[in-house]
Length: 144
Image: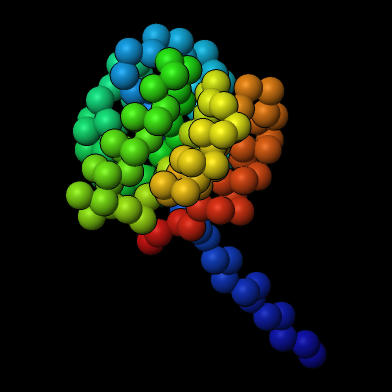
């Protein structure tokens, strides 16, 4: 007689939580919505802030929603102002463990400068949504 063993308990991990944000006066959010939907369809929990958010509001929402990362979309050319502000406010509020990545029309020279400041990745127009999903899964730790 053989005893059937119960299956090993399946370890479940909560989904990655992401805040997709649009800061400043940038009024074009099609790309942010495309990314938000792709991440949601990939099983991630996504909060979209909507247009015209301040970096302070974005950080407050990220903390309230207990997100693992923030995806900031910038098409206005203000990336060298808004990303540093966002990182500074995350640090001020003790939330520098939240991974920040971004997307938009950002010159290659500025991408390296932003990464040196602490932005983990920048995706430029033409990036496949699966590349963003794969990067997040490989680079964003999920806190418990």
